[in-house]
Image (cartoon, rainbow, N blue to C red; front, side, top):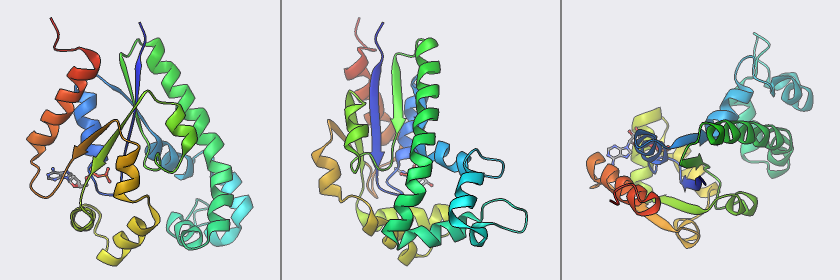
Length: 206
Ligand code: ADP
């Protein structure tokens, strides 16, 4: 049995996690690159020592763990610093992605869902998946959702959006677009996921 590898992407607050949860509900095995990245830099994470060595004590909290807000601040507006952090994290993320994907294949998952926020920006990632699904959402709705979900200011959300791929660029690499605007109910979103799942896996065919 071959597994279908789907890359799921979308801007911050577009509804990626909501879509991926719906897909997991249909039996997909999820490999969440954001969660992997977070766990690497969380207290006790495998990347903590290497990042601390590279960036110095300014990015460490009193507890000796990474001060992730300070780290984010440091790399946010400095592309060279960001590349330095990525050079440490990306190979580690890649290893963990491979490990989780192999485990899912051994468990005979019919569908592997890779949640990759920066998939549009990464040709390497695009080559690793069979299909690309983009969650598309107007920017004002992204801003509202992240303010409500994470308590960020509008300016903070807009600054992240400005650094991410544009909606047009994302949609141009999509095999399927799931629209998740202000009027889209969670039920309608789930229905779209269900339809895509059925079309691509033949799950509803008799
Ligand atoms: P992402 O993973 O792309 O950053 P999330 O899936 O976390 O986005 O969605 C951002 C927030 O918006 C979450 O709190 C989520 O529950 C909410 N949300 C997403 N889509 C909808 C929707 N169609 N209706 C209501 N709330 C939604």
